[in-house]
Amino acid sequence: MRAQADRISDHTGYRLVKVGHVAAAAFDEALAPLGMRPRHVMVLEAIRGGTLSQQDLCQLTGMDRTTMVAVVDELERLGYAHRERSAADRRKHVVKPTAAGESAFEEAARALLAAEEALLGPLSAAERDSLGGLVAKLFEAAARRPG
Amino acid sequence: MRAQADRISDHTGYRLVKVGHVAAAAFDEALAPLGMRPRHVMVLEAIRGGTLSQQDLCQLTGMDRTTMVAVVDELERLGYAHRERSAADRRKHVVKPTAAGESAFEEAARALLAAEEALLGPLSAAERDSLGGLVAKLFEAAARRPG
DNA sequence: TCTGATAATCAGTAATACTGAATATCAGCT
DNA sequence: AGCTGATATTCAGTATTACTGATTATCAGA
Picture 1 (cartoon, rainbow over the protein chains, first blue to last red):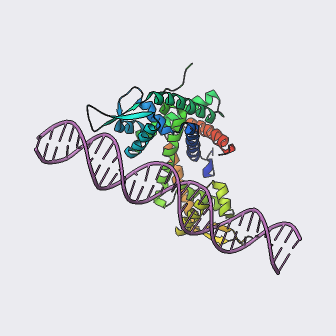
Picture 2: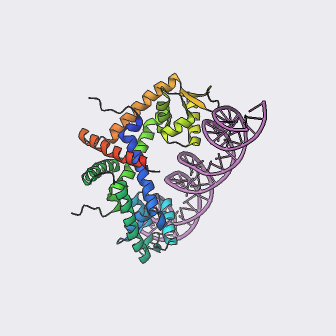
């Protein structure tokens, strides 16, 4: 009747935090050869197709506006994107991918997928599906909260 | 046959990172009224019973030695622990809890448990068990890695 | 043509986690 | 006893992160 863990480090919450850190480090490492971090890939993904200002990108990704300035700076420096002033609203900087940026995104997406494969390697296919569903539930519940 | 998510933000790996952040923030918030953070509680927990030096605590918790100095400083300032020079090895500072520290740990453990309850609230009991098992597997696999 | 709001940028700040150096002490060898 | 290399703790300094607040340019509406 008593399934409660004694030590804090045996609790699911603690382990969720740790696994999140490990996953974040793995994704950083997977993208390091490309000179990017996950946030850059998120932006490259978002600007495929759409015409998005930095502010739009902030809302889509949850990044701070000042962080977004730096991320777009870096994507420009890498030759993966460039800013254009919006003709409709000249306050806005529309961020557009370059051809190199589009293929860099493809490569980064593959690298992230491989890192995720390695991360979830200890789990069977059924277990991964199960984990995906459970984490999605927690994710959506968290998204509905103020934070 | 194709269960792969299109967007990065739909992947389990990305969500694991996010959920980890949310959990960490929830634990910080739960302990804020006590003037502590999870790392302080980890140390308070470890020093119940055992006779541990700061170095021992570093190995148990994974914290850096310089971080541990600050954590023990803060526990002393709160009146929850104090350093004693080890008689056996005078290089070592044995960290011992005060009576106030022991009850503060109990209260902190309750606060963390409540925060975990809230975090896992969206899941049924069966789902929590399932998540706990899956996260434990990932956690142990990560612990075996060099990082 | 004002007024208040919004977009992007920049400068400065606070927190985090670390590296490397300094000090004190130990354990083993001669 | 005295020397050598290693260990425990501490401190100072560094790099990174994520932010707040101020600034400039532009917009939309009275």
